[in-house]
Structure formats: structure tokens, C-alpha cells
Length: 220
Image 1 (cartoon, helix red, strand yellow):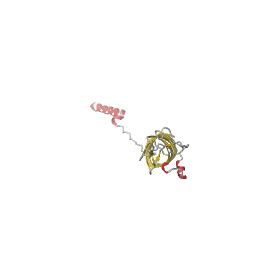
Image 2 (cartoon, one colour):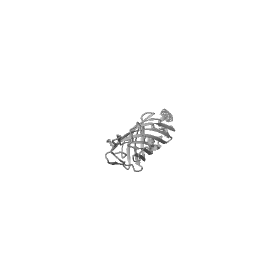
Image 3 (cartoon, one colour):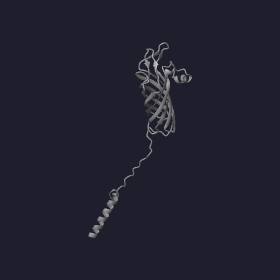
Image 4 (spheres, helix red, strand yellow):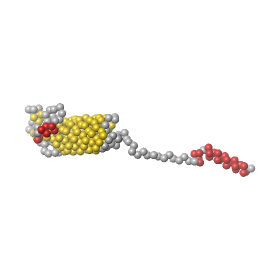
């Protein structure tokens, strides 16, 4: 009788364990797989890219007081290297007359060449720059200081040459448009002193610091 009871208890225990697999057979944990090299929303795998940028400028150092201006630029990127040509015009905080007879006012027309690094993984850029332009040039639709320099039409005290560098970010707004901001420092090369109509001399500071904000369209 006792052996039959023991046999029944053994069979009941086995049946209960089989009905509850989680009790007798613990579930193995699922392996965690890390996917390496996953692109972020700011990354690009495009080897070549190009586009245009329009920016508003603010700075100090090139002209008296706070300087304001605008720039249009075109860029070309290959992998994580880029070059850019920009065309800009700066004006001082207050209107300053250089020559009342010709109504020439103080300003800066400048061509800027930039080259450097543009990350394909993050919206970051860094570059060096060189500039050539004209202080207090005649009124034109677009800066024309460089062509006049080639022909020798720019007075020596009106020439602008500078070199420097900068950092920027191009935050994507859509697949083809970005909000771009940057900071730059440019150091004038050579002595650039001119006489104003008031009889006071003017000379740019030892360095010009700038900030910009604008819109860039094109491939990243």
C-alpha cells in the first residue's frame, strides 16, 4: 500500500513539473546585440557634396565699433575635407565718411577662401581662411576689390589682407537645408591705415572677431 502511494506521489510531482517548464527549466536570457556603426540623424555617407550659404554677420575689429554685414558662399566637400569661396560686405556701426567729394563711406568688401575639416558623422566644421578685399571701396552691386587689385586700381592704404580660422555647426532642418552658425578670427596682414574725411586716421585692430548665422542649402 505504501509503495503504491509513493509511486502515485512521484507521478504527480513529475506531471506538475512538466506542466510548469519555468520551474524546472529556467529560461535562458536573450543575448544583447550591439550594432556598431549605426548612423545618427546628422550623419551622411555621401562622398561628394556641394551647396550655397547665405549668412548674416556681426563682429568687431575690422571697422570701428560693432560691424554688421552679409555673405554669400559656395562650398564643395569631398569626404571630410571642404573648400569654400565667400563674398561679403561689412559696414561699421555708425556711418563714417572717407571722402565727402565722392561720397565714399567706410566699409569692407572682402573675398574669403576657407578650407578644412567637415565631419560626416556630426554637424561640426573647422577651417583656416585667407581674405583679400578693399576698405572704403566705391559703391557697387557686389564687392569688386580683388579685380581692382589685379589691375592695380586699389590704393595701397585701402587694401585688406587677412588670415585666420574658425569653427562652425550646420544643424539639419531638412535633407537639403541646414541652419549654420560659426565663429571666426581673422588677423590683418600688413599696415592698413587711411585718413578719414574728418582728418582722423583709421587703422583696423590687430584681430577681427566675428559670429555668423544663416541658411545653407545643398547636399551635406
